Length: 151
Image 1: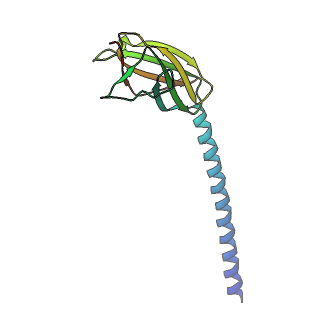
Image 2: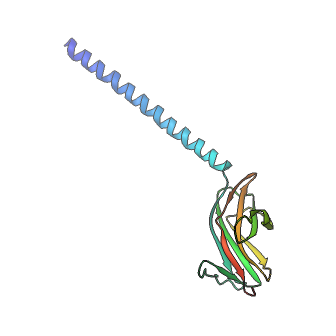
Image 3: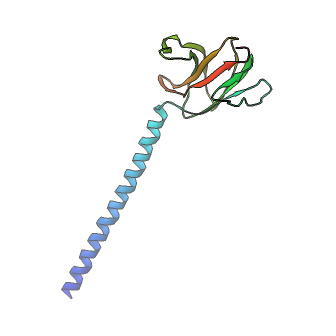
């Protein structure tokens, strides 16, 4: 009888210990998720997509790695995360040209889809990129090869 009682007591203690560990693990998971969400708030936004469109809304397709742009185009940027501003740049093609990059525009942002109407220079044969910021932390897009229709 004593052995059975000790065995039941042993099982009960172990079950209690396991259940309290499970609660601690669950609290830790919730705490880790909250920390992760807080960290995401401070990260630079993700750049999901950049699309060039004609003024009547037609998407300009890439041909042989180049986008041929009309005199005026809409640059559509889709961003996720906290985004406060976007800078648009152009830089000449070729090597060692990063010092010649030019800021096209800086836009204050408060939404996920940003539209910018750009009057494209006649003689452009450049790379295009953006930097999306969350306050002072930024993320750079890839390069897009662009050429003006009149080049």
